[in-house]
Figure: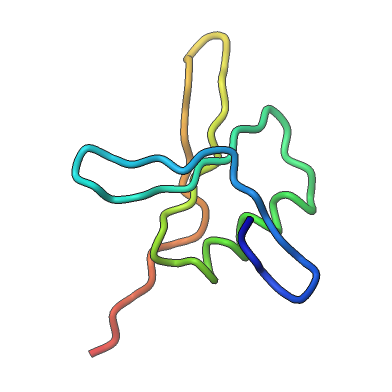
Length: 76
């Protein structure tokens, strides 16, 4: 469980390790409720080191994943 705020947590469906060793958080949902979408966006901001993906399955196209949020910009 990841803490997002006091008394607010989020448990991703999967922690995925890519072949290069990087970690990703995956949430598998057929339909996204508003509260779940907000938690995913907050997770992507608070835990910016781990890319967060919303993963869905479509009968015609198979599995798809969409990154939630944007990677942080590097200010120099």
